Image (cartoon, rainbow, N blue to C red; front, side):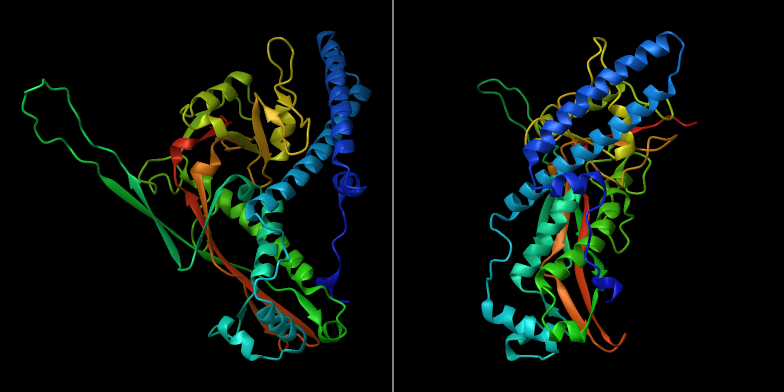
Length: 412
């Protein structure tokens, strides 16, 4: 069997617990139990620190419980992501919009036959547009695993670029008496920004014999293979992509970044922490209150797992944890009463890094999808395998920098 065909296996505690019957209620109960143990152990550690004593056993216990809390919260987030994927499309995956075209596409996948029904999906390079239900399945998968797709806005386009117009204001007004003359006032000015797409690809392979024997569920297989590669590449690009044949990451729009002057509305403001590897409650509050109140209703924190582990230990003046785990399905963990999205591609909390972002990403960041997934069947390059060169064009960038603020760590 080709290495490309090895089925994906569950990984780690998250997969084991999440796949064990899919009982989200049980996972939530375990999460709350472990979270209480974490708080109790942290209190024990505080007593040791006060007594100037470091018990290795307590330290190791706290690390184990912290890892379990992280895994259980990730399992809940995974379940929430599936709900988000279903809500995004409004219809379940697999609903055939054009049965005749879909059947012709499957025949081409298995035997390489080009049927008349495929002509409308043909390209100059010999590839064919995947059927609507396949495209939707891949999109669902991407939403499930791509944190940015869960929280940002998405725009589908039929051309190579999308231009957004910005109102830069400037309209003037004035107070006048009932009969006073009214002179001409200033008019609003406009700016524009164009979002172009880059091409992302995956190239899974199967043997012709496997295709002949119909051992492959093509829809599920290609969606899984494409999702793995697309989500990894997208995840990095939406955060720190340089915009060359890929999306422009939102961190590049921060003051001092490569795209700081790209948006007509300005750069994303950053707040600087006093330490190079730690943040405080006051610094997180400064980040929150830097966002205009008009946007805070849909704001959230974004950080990676490592940074979340540090934030999880923070407490207020009364000893209460600033971070709180999910208490019900569909609800993410919270930090200072705002949702937290774990984003693996975010930098660690080290000197001069940008590890924490806060804002309304639905208004602040736009993902641009060129309509359609294109597939090129290649039975020649690597016999006896048939490769399915699959491409999708994706772009992205910040549309409203006022909605997002970023924490920068102090220089060492």
